[in-house]
Length: 235
Image 1 (tube, rainbow, N blue to C red):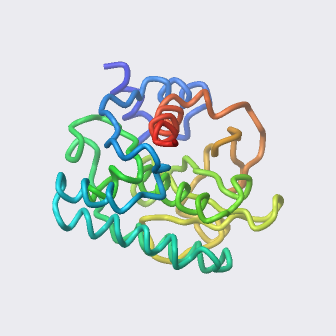
Image 2 (image 1 turned 135 degrees about the vertical axis):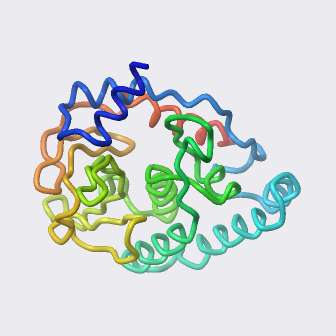
Image 3 (image 1 turned 60 degrees about the horizontal axis):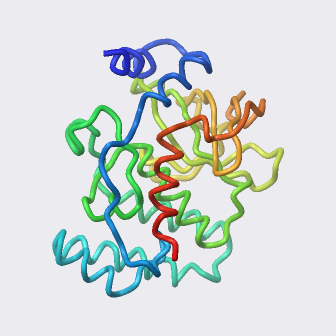
């Protein structure tokens, strides 16, 4: 009940404080296990054997989605970052949006990119995580990216997007599953940024940008769990 109350307050209520947000995320524990892949896979780069095995388990459409993801990684390997951002955003925005309750039968579940693709569905954090890990695999520096917790004003609920900083002090670009276009945060008045994080840091946000550094993302349990489940796939 405590989890449900916190979750509903953050989805529909006024902008929450950091303490409440951290309480929320510490309570949102993932319970499902990772889709296992071969020992020589990295969680993003998959062997053909793994793709085939997951296809046998989840069906031919799932196999095709994973194969298309791997082709995307190959095709974009030498592309400039603008192209990588555009194509990765376009690719994942084709996946179905599904609420966690409907999809996973859980109040909140942060899926790995493999889980997201084989089930062809997820919600805002799953889109953001898949884009983050794919762009990281393509060589986009971690310090240029953050997953941002925002309030979507038009929906009156919590939302997550991936933000990209071409320079440290720049207004970030927003990769969002709600719209197809990548726009600067200054052109998204419908999003109120609360905080953001990546593999290294956790920040409070002001006017769409990372502002006050408040610590490590290890304080966000669901994020730690997703990273751990993906990292377990490394050889």
